[in-house]
Image 1 (cartoon, helix red, strand yellow):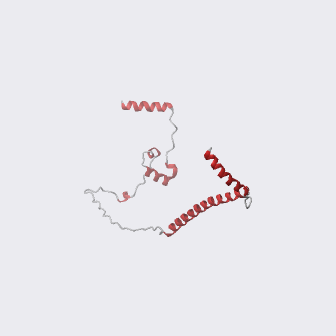
Image 2 (cartoon, one colour):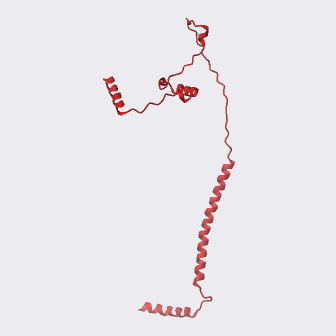
Image 3 (cartoon, helix red, strand yellow):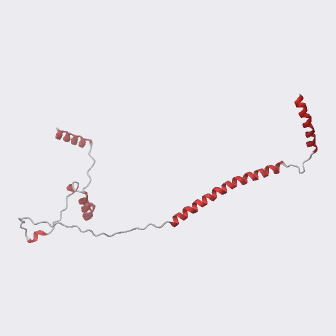
Length: 158
């Protein structure tokens, strides 16, 4: 108790002195909390203001970059290319042809032959004669037709 007793006696005099003092202004808890909240909001508001300012600067820099770059130009060049054509030689024995026989003969394919023609020939026929130049679609094969076809294929291979 020796150390505590000595400190207690010194502290009790200090305590008595503090007890005699009165605050100059009464402390209002509500005002204190309101001011603390204002300071906290001011700090967080400042952060958002800084972030928004940086974003505006980045956007302005990007706009200036896009506006300052030169526009794209399209360059067209006309080139003349000379190609040597080989002249076909006449056959040694030309066939004798009547004077009127050199007229072009128009060939039209029958609907059965169209499926064997190339795509470009089919297209030419359709453009010339319309859709009537295409063959009519055949009915869907039945099970018996499939069996018959399978038997034909198997007999051909064997």
